[in-house]
Length: 68
Image 1 (tube, rainbow, N blue to C red):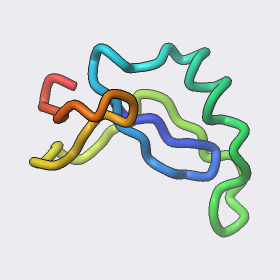
Image 2: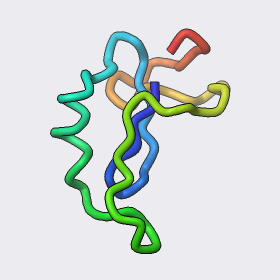
Image 3: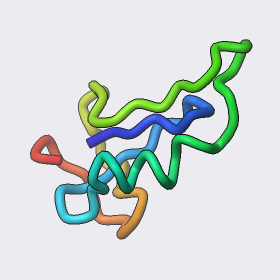
Image 4: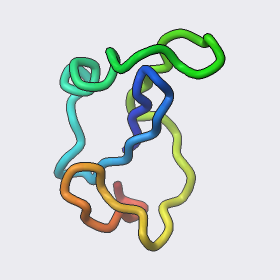
């Protein structure tokens, strides 16, 4: 599951660690404006590319799979 911070930084989480929409909003929506003056780029449960070996959860560092 992918969250974009308000600054448009992608963060990926496994199923065990995924924050609720409210938790994600509280943690990541106030991290500054997006690049190029685009304003707030916060996004929750956004599309993401297929996870590859080495892609890991932002919180627990577990290897991400297609089920995440």
